[in-house]
Length: 185
Image (tube, rainbow, N blue to C red; front, top):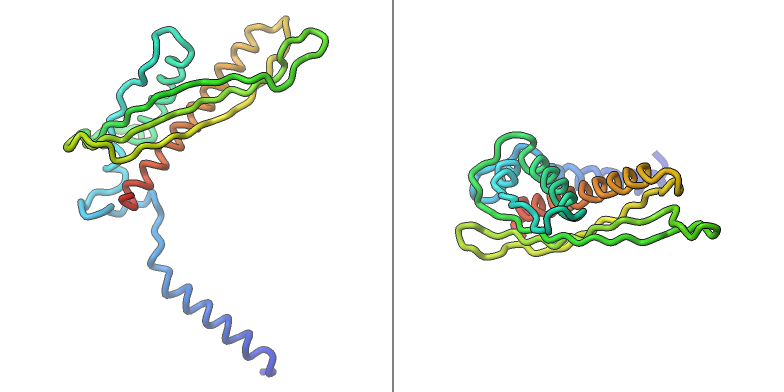
Protein backbone atom coordinates (compact mmCIF):
# COMPACT_ATOMS: atom_id res chain seq x y z
CA UNK A 1 0.00 0.00 0.00
CA UNK A 2 1.44 3.36 -0.96
CA UNK A 3 1.55 6.33 1.36
CA UNK A 4 -1.00 8.28 -0.72
CA UNK A 5 -3.66 5.54 -0.59
CA UNK A 6 -3.63 5.20 3.22
CA UNK A 7 -5.44 8.53 3.87
CA UNK A 8 -7.89 7.74 1.09
CA UNK A 9 -8.64 4.32 2.60
CA UNK A 10 -9.08 5.77 6.09
CA UNK A 11 -11.56 8.37 4.76
CA UNK A 12 -13.49 5.64 2.99
CA UNK A 13 -13.66 3.52 6.16
CA UNK A 14 -14.76 6.54 8.17
CA UNK A 15 -17.55 7.34 5.67
CA UNK A 16 -18.75 3.72 5.65
CA UNK A 17 -18.78 3.54 9.45
CA UNK A 18 -20.79 6.79 9.68
CA UNK A 19 -23.22 5.48 7.07
CA UNK A 20 -23.65 2.28 9.07
CA UNK A 21 -24.32 4.18 12.28
CA UNK A 22 -26.99 6.42 10.74
CA UNK A 23 -28.67 3.76 8.59
CA UNK A 24 -31.29 3.03 11.25
CA UNK A 25 -32.26 6.69 11.60
CA UNK A 26 -34.04 6.96 8.28
CA UNK A 27 -37.46 5.46 7.69
CA UNK A 28 -39.73 5.84 4.68
CA UNK A 29 -42.54 8.33 5.23
CA UNK A 30 -45.28 6.07 3.89
CA UNK A 31 -43.98 2.83 5.40
CA UNK A 32 -45.95 0.63 7.79
CA UNK A 33 -44.60 2.01 11.03
CA UNK A 34 -46.25 3.63 13.99
CA UNK A 35 -46.36 7.40 14.25
CA UNK A 36 -45.88 9.27 17.50
CA UNK A 37 -46.99 7.90 20.84
CA UNK A 38 -50.45 6.83 19.65
CA UNK A 39 -49.19 3.59 18.12
CA UNK A 40 -51.13 4.02 14.88
CA UNK A 41 -49.60 4.02 11.42
CA UNK A 42 -49.42 7.00 9.12
CA UNK A 43 -52.12 5.56 6.87
CA UNK A 44 -54.43 5.26 9.91
CA UNK A 45 -53.81 8.89 10.83
CA UNK A 46 -54.40 10.08 7.26
CA UNK A 47 -57.62 8.09 6.91
CA UNK A 48 -58.94 9.76 10.08
CA UNK A 49 -59.04 13.13 8.31
CA UNK A 50 -62.55 14.22 7.30
CA UNK A 51 -62.67 16.34 4.14
CA UNK A 52 -65.98 18.23 3.91
CA UNK A 53 -67.09 19.52 0.49
CA UNK A 54 -65.30 22.65 -0.70
CA UNK A 55 -67.53 25.70 -0.33
CA UNK A 56 -68.21 27.22 -3.74
CA UNK A 57 -71.21 28.59 -5.55
CA UNK A 58 -73.13 25.81 -7.32
CA UNK A 59 -72.67 25.59 -11.06
CA UNK A 60 -69.35 27.42 -11.14
CA UNK A 61 -66.10 26.05 -12.52
CA UNK A 62 -64.44 26.27 -9.10
CA UNK A 63 -67.24 24.10 -7.64
CA UNK A 64 -66.42 21.36 -10.17
CA UNK A 65 -62.70 21.73 -9.47
CA UNK A 66 -63.42 21.54 -5.73
CA UNK A 67 -65.23 18.23 -6.21
CA UNK A 68 -62.38 16.87 -8.33
CA UNK A 69 -59.77 17.96 -5.80
CA UNK A 70 -61.77 16.59 -2.84
CA UNK A 71 -62.29 13.21 -4.54
CA UNK A 72 -58.57 12.94 -5.31
CA UNK A 73 -57.66 13.96 -1.76
CA UNK A 74 -60.07 11.45 -0.22
CA UNK A 75 -58.57 8.68 -2.34
CA UNK A 76 -55.05 9.77 -1.41
CA UNK A 77 -55.86 9.87 2.31
CA UNK A 78 -57.72 6.56 2.54
CA UNK A 79 -56.00 4.64 -0.25
CA UNK A 80 -59.43 3.84 -1.68
CA UNK A 81 -60.49 2.04 1.49
CA UNK A 82 -63.01 3.06 4.10
CA UNK A 83 -62.29 6.15 6.17
CA UNK A 84 -61.58 5.76 9.86
CA UNK A 85 -63.51 7.62 12.53
CA UNK A 86 -62.67 11.24 11.96
CA UNK A 87 -60.27 12.80 14.42
CA UNK A 88 -59.52 15.80 12.22
CA UNK A 89 -61.39 18.02 9.77
CA UNK A 90 -59.69 19.58 6.76
CA UNK A 91 -61.29 22.83 5.58
CA UNK A 92 -60.24 24.03 2.11
CA UNK A 93 -60.91 27.27 0.23
CA UNK A 94 -60.09 27.48 -3.47
CA UNK A 95 -59.65 30.32 -5.93
CA UNK A 96 -58.74 30.11 -9.60
CA UNK A 97 -56.83 32.25 -12.08
CA UNK A 98 -56.47 32.23 -15.85
CA UNK A 99 -53.74 34.10 -17.71
CA UNK A 100 -53.24 34.31 -21.46
CA UNK A 101 -49.67 33.37 -22.27
CA UNK A 102 -49.61 33.49 -26.09
CA UNK A 103 -52.08 35.45 -28.19
CA UNK A 104 -52.50 35.09 -31.96
CA UNK A 105 -51.56 38.50 -33.42
CA UNK A 106 -53.96 38.12 -36.36
CA UNK A 107 -57.13 37.17 -34.50
CA UNK A 108 -56.27 38.45 -30.98
CA UNK A 109 -57.44 35.09 -29.61
CA UNK A 110 -55.46 33.28 -26.92
CA UNK A 111 -53.54 30.20 -28.07
CA UNK A 112 -51.97 29.12 -24.79
CA UNK A 113 -53.30 29.90 -21.35
CA UNK A 114 -52.16 29.20 -17.81
CA UNK A 115 -54.74 27.96 -15.34
CA UNK A 116 -54.01 28.23 -11.65
CA UNK A 117 -55.56 27.18 -8.37
CA UNK A 118 -54.74 28.72 -5.02
CA UNK A 119 -55.78 26.69 -2.00
CA UNK A 120 -55.89 27.68 1.65
CA UNK A 121 -56.37 24.78 4.04
CA UNK A 122 -56.80 24.34 7.78
CA UNK A 123 -56.57 21.05 9.66
CA UNK A 124 -58.75 21.20 12.78
CA UNK A 125 -58.50 18.74 15.67
CA UNK A 126 -62.07 17.53 16.31
CA UNK A 127 -61.48 16.89 20.02
CA UNK A 128 -60.29 20.41 20.83
CA UNK A 129 -61.77 22.33 17.91
CA UNK A 130 -58.46 24.14 17.44
CA UNK A 131 -56.55 24.38 14.17
CA UNK A 132 -53.30 22.40 14.15
CA UNK A 133 -52.13 23.25 10.61
CA UNK A 134 -52.83 26.25 8.43
CA UNK A 135 -51.27 26.46 5.02
CA UNK A 136 -51.53 27.52 1.43
CA UNK A 137 -50.54 25.79 -1.77
CA UNK A 138 -50.94 26.47 -5.45
CA UNK A 139 -50.75 24.85 -8.85
CA UNK A 140 -50.18 26.35 -12.29
CA UNK A 141 -50.76 24.39 -15.49
CA UNK A 142 -50.93 25.44 -19.11
CA UNK A 143 -53.18 24.31 -21.93
CA UNK A 144 -53.60 25.01 -25.62
CA UNK A 145 -56.62 26.51 -27.32
CA UNK A 146 -56.48 25.03 -30.83
CA UNK A 147 -58.29 27.83 -32.63
CA UNK A 148 -61.62 29.44 -33.36
CA UNK A 149 -63.02 26.43 -35.21
CA UNK A 150 -62.39 24.01 -32.33
CA UNK A 151 -64.28 25.50 -29.40
CA UNK A 152 -64.99 22.14 -27.79
CA UNK A 153 -61.33 21.13 -27.93
CA UNK A 154 -60.45 24.34 -26.11
CA UNK A 155 -63.09 23.65 -23.47
CA UNK A 156 -61.80 20.10 -23.02
CA UNK A 157 -58.27 21.49 -22.67
CA UNK A 158 -59.46 23.75 -19.87
CA UNK A 159 -61.21 20.88 -18.07
CA UNK A 160 -58.05 18.77 -18.35
CA UNK A 161 -55.98 21.65 -16.98
CA UNK A 162 -58.40 22.04 -14.06
CA UNK A 163 -58.16 18.32 -13.28
CA UNK A 164 -54.34 18.35 -13.41
CA UNK A 165 -54.21 21.40 -11.13
CA UNK A 166 -56.66 19.77 -8.68
CA UNK A 167 -54.46 16.65 -8.51
CA UNK A 168 -51.37 18.72 -7.74
CA UNK A 169 -53.23 20.57 -4.97
CA UNK A 170 -54.45 17.27 -3.48
CA UNK A 171 -50.92 15.81 -3.59
CA UNK A 172 -49.45 18.91 -1.94
CA UNK A 173 -52.00 18.87 0.89
CA UNK A 174 -51.56 15.12 1.44
CA UNK A 175 -47.78 15.54 1.63
CA UNK A 176 -48.14 18.33 4.20
CA UNK A 177 -50.54 16.27 6.32
CA UNK A 178 -48.23 13.25 6.16
CA UNK A 179 -45.33 15.44 7.25
CA UNK A 180 -47.37 16.76 10.17
CA UNK A 181 -48.43 13.30 11.34
CA UNK A 182 -44.93 11.83 10.95
CA UNK A 183 -43.02 14.68 12.60
CA UNK A 184 -45.75 16.13 14.83
CA UNK A 185 -45.09 19.65 13.58
